[in-house]
Picture 1 (spheres, rainbow over the protein chains, first blue to last red):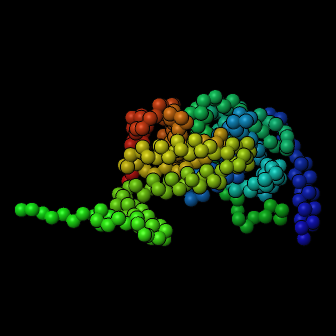
Picture 2 (picture 1 turned 120 degrees about the vertical axis):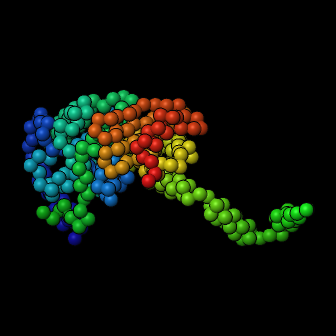
Amino acid sequence: MPYLRRLSEFFLSIFLRFDWVPTVVAPDEPATRYIFDKDHFSEGKGVVKYAAFLPSKKTGDISVYRVKNCSEWRIWALGKHFVGRLRLDNVILCARADLPARAFVQQGLRVIAKKRPHQRHAIVNGWPGEKAGQRVKAIALARDSVLVVKPRSANINDK
Amino acid sequence: MILATVPPYEMVCPVEAGLSEEYKNIKALMDNIRFKSREPLSFSWRESVRDDIERSCRTHSKTGWDGYDAEPVSLESARGALRIINALPDHINPPNVVPEPDGVIALEWNDGSQKTLALSLSGNLLTYAGVFGGTCKKYGEEPFFSALPSTIIGILSEYFPKV
């Protein structure tokens, strides 16, 4: 029933908020970048495309989630409730790119905890101004990342 | 010896007069099929990449298409990608079409994970960036008018030849 579903999702989003992570991002921490566009990864080749890591022109950074000690279920639930659900157009989460925070630092970027909309949210800034430089870093990040495609049968509301 | 040549049918008979719209449409389709069938096979991937560019323009036309703050793909960028496609040599692998968050359509060559090159055109400025193997990185900007710069041709021929 739709209202029961909505109610369960409401309680789930509250449950997901009860979380704590340190303010400083450690280099060995695993991070994930949620992917909402099918042209930003290749399921056949099992690779993430560099464009998934290019910074937003508006904010000049990219948004990632710190996923240390998170179960698979929780990682997908964070993406659904704290990234996809915040949008009015209700975009569909397709996949994610997992990589250690160290990979960003190795490219001369900074990972900074930004605990809104969630404790585990962080931004990656320090991108060069010119497009070619951004692309080279994004290509290196895509190579260092592991593609995880959202399982078709998985319902993240069913724990 | 005198050889008699038969003039084309259209030169003998004025085909436009008294013909229905259906006939004209079918004739245009047949001409198109005849033209395509004469194209070398190496041209066929261009048509497929052009279709991908057209599809990418359609599906990435709204702000935030990437789930974050992406800008809609611009027509200027799509035209730029088409210009690159027309200038690419035949002896290289076909590229993938990749929409970027700033509304640019780039062409990407990726051999799996070790070698990647991305190209896009804005106005007459070609922006390229590539990572090849361990630490080899090549990136920059080059002017582009009708032919691809030798730097780009060199990279494509070395890392992404058609096998």
